[in-house]
Image (cartoon, rainbow, N blue to C red; front, side, top):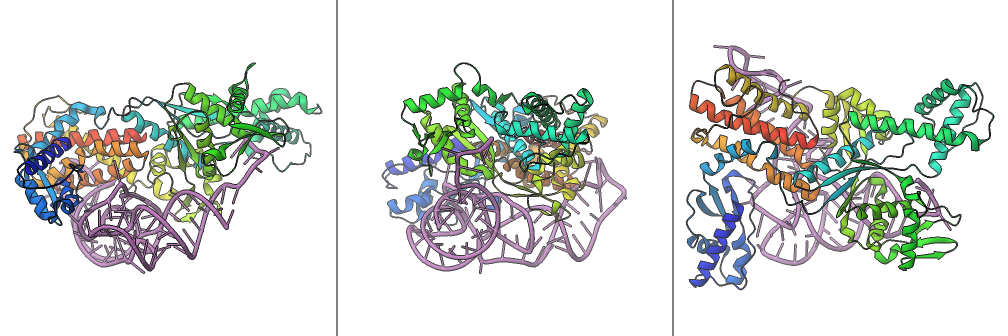
Length: 562
RNA sequence: GCGCCUGUAGCUCAGUAGGACAGAGCAGCGGCCUUCUAAGCCGCGGGUCAGAGGUUCGAAUCCUCUCAGGCGCGCCA
């Protein structure tokens, strides 16, 4: 439709120029907009505004010339108006709009998908929380943002993989083992002091208790070298298992859990290989006993250490090797979802990617801001960073997975999020999750009602019969407004995927549900007029399909009754 | 000090590859269930788009500066 209209405008410009009615140098780009107000038509084009200067005529005059030279367009466009400073406003025919409905039903789950992402295999790496403790609320937000980002990319045809990077190397694993050992000794009744940097959570105590249950006191009194590997490994496995289970409950599945240890394995470990390669390429150098990557050459504030003076590689070195591995596996694009407190890391990572021979834009970092938990408007845990102290499990246990996921998606990810637990828990119209789900449930109740009344257009389970229905009864303005909303869905998905803006989907669904609820209240779907009933059921079916597709992108369920 | 992000209605936030009078939800006030689930609908009030300049036919949107808030600036992970 958009291409047809821009083709017509282009043709009109050409006609006008060859007729000598309009002078301009190069044909301008034709930009089409969706006017915010219905009074401005369905498609607007400001091309005359930009052309006015070169044509040395007022924008409205230019617009009139264009209109006079438009080719015929019956069927698609009802009328064209010149409005405001010189906009061309196109009014599409009712038939064009209602013809969308059978298309939506026929496309089903595929409605709103695109193919333009097909050529760019993408990995989304997200969560990647250190396996030293349970996931907190902030991780939960990152998890949903990453998951839905991947869903959006898949919806536009991108081959996409989800990956969790497990930081299972380095000193923190030792600290985890020692922390567990301290709890173990305490469980045996010993009074052991706590080093400052140890993890103290109760989950450590549980793990220590399990070791004691299994092994009694056999690990007490031994030198650290003998017990540390066992304690570290036991704690690590237990915690990672918890994380997996929690993410699974949260509806998030990874294609791969990538262990940082892989980067240090073998005779020719990837980390060493990357460092050597960068050195050979002159991108890395030795100074003060350390090995540095010259990231300042690509915009970073300072060069970064890859190997410390004591010979130990840094987290950054692992990350460089990891990203090289990502690209080596064939991903054309890599998306990292990070907590916003890591934003200072972007510069060095982009620089590293560049030095690995990639375009820095092959790496996209999505930053996810803090979550502040509220309860009835009052901050939880007396901290603006309550999200750091409350586990994801506590929240999902209290308010459910659907509401939690939805609320995490209602803000653009790079904005701080206030999450009111009481609001999220409400089962009323005040809660947007239920509001949207209820619209979907209503559609299905209409199917059931119609089936009862002997209308065989949809089965009670929502399956469409595929019958051809006369949609002329839907040509009133209110109905068309709803249809237009449905027709906008593919563009919303397109936009959200292009910008990696997950929040656009919830906003759209909220508006669609609102329009549907209002329509439902005013208009009877299953009524006395068979032709109208059938037409309106097609409309309802399309609404249900779009809501289901949208909620599906969000990983939120679409119940058929509530 | 430097860098990144943010500043839109009482509150929480959309709207920013410039476009036609600035939107939603919540909160407040007032209405609607003999009608397909009221987990719903309808109406009312409410904004110098932080501030000041600039670019433009046109700026919440782009540029500069100022103010306010958040975050980051390790041979930590």
